[in-house]
Image (cartoon, rainbow, N blue to C red; front, side):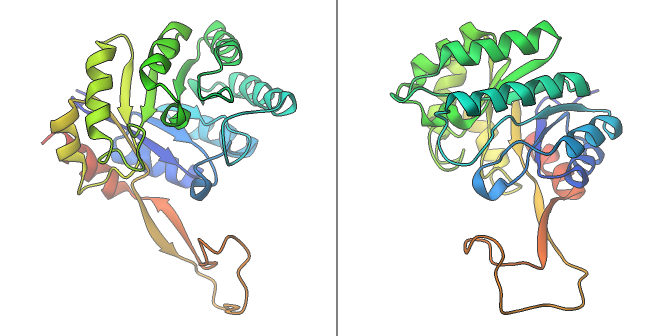
Length: 251
């Protein structure tokens, strides 16, 4: 029997996706580059995740970091990635495209939703929703397009900060679409968030730091962003954290 409150894990790798499954998550949002808010994972990650996961697999479709206003070329990349997810046998996709005025790009998003649903895939609208100028109008647009759920932090940095807005959205949605809180949800925040918002699905990366097994360290170089200077460690979804979040959500 599934718990009342279900957890989707934002997995940054196949390793994290498998940990999410072992911990009891119902679905994986597979992505890359979480420090940049997430981008589309590689074909190899998608293909192997589909082969090795029994739970639902929803890759993130986001060609780059930054805003959600895309050029025609970027939209072609998005469509190609959606087609690959269909061919790979994914259960769904996670999308979000906006217009320059902060409204949902209904034309482009509807095209992606139609393509996915035609092949039996579900669609989540991601946190581009949190960047919309009018979240109430965006909610109605996304419902009309046929998405299953909206991932949101209530327009704030974390879901706990946006809890008032999330609760309002859940009430306004009235069962027409699932409002799934995400961002900053962990063992310390999940119980309060559930009590306040009445959400039935939640989203978390449930990660912990894992040290590199490299014996030699070059301490004089940073290969990536200065915001993430540790070249000898990675963040990976933790099985126990997944279990704990689910338990506390349903406590």
